[in-house]
Each structure stands twice: as structure tokens, then as C-alpha cells.
Length: 188
Image (cartoon, rainbow, N blue to C red):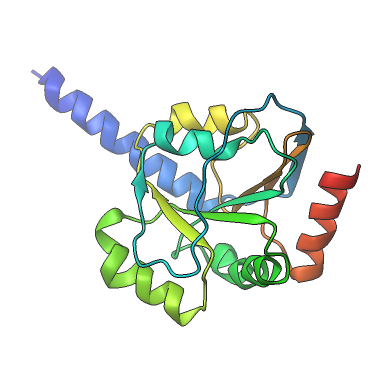
């Protein structure tokens, strides 16, 4: 006879593994642009990631909206994601050239790796944009809240202000690619 408690635990582990597998294996070039209602944003950009906060989705969600016309770039990524690692320097270069733009890098890495892996990685790659970790196992819920068309694959970038919002489920090939998409998002 199967113990329901064990079955529930195995199902949860299976779905977590399936989520990680989907993120690892998928990457497409879908783009969706929509206008969304505004919410207040309160971010604190730091040039040094001495302290990397760990958020669940409810804590992160307010950072995904703004009432201002300031431009925000929120990038979901992980150290184990090769396309993510490849595009990080372009995002950082853009942030360096445009200090008026708020950049938030949402790491999908494990919180236990902050000091041993994540901080050394950021230092090695000269990443000084604000980094937070999203540690929320209920991906089936929060992915759809971000964008119903998002498969869960990373890298995934949101570019927005109080009037425009665009989602990019792909990596940016170079700085000019990122600049073009930002200009298209905010000027069209």
C-alpha cells in the first residue's frame, strides 16, 4: 500500500525537478508587449553585492512594477545557465552606460551558494548591478503571474516603465541587441 504522505512528497520533488529541467532545456525567442497597471516600486541599486537578499515571490513581486516613467530591467538568470552568463556582461555594460536605468538581476541559484559561489562569480564577472535570489518553489503559480506566456525558461527579461512593458524569453546577443529592444519597448 502506498503511503499518501510519501506520494505527495515524491510528486513535489518530481515537479521541482521538472521545473528545473524545463528551465535548463528551453530557450525561445518569444516576445510579448503589453501595458500593465502601475504599482509602487522600491528598489535599492547597489554597486557592490555585499548582501544578497533572498525573496519569495510575494516579496519580489512589487519590484516588477512602477508608477514612474523610470526604466527598469529585471533579468531572471542563474550561474548554471550558459545563455544567462553570456548576456550578463551586456546587461551590466548597459547599466554602466545608463545609470538612470534601474537593473535588477534575479538569480535562480540556491541561497546556500550565495557566499561560496554567487558572490565570487559576480566579482569575477564584474557584475555590480543589484542581485537578489528568488527562492520560491511554487513556480507553477508565480511564473504565470509574471507573464502567462512565459514557459519558465531563463534567461527571461522584463523591460518596463509605468506605460510600457515587454517580456523577452531569450538571451541578448550583444549590447546593441539589448539597446535596440529597450528603445523599441519604450519608444513605440
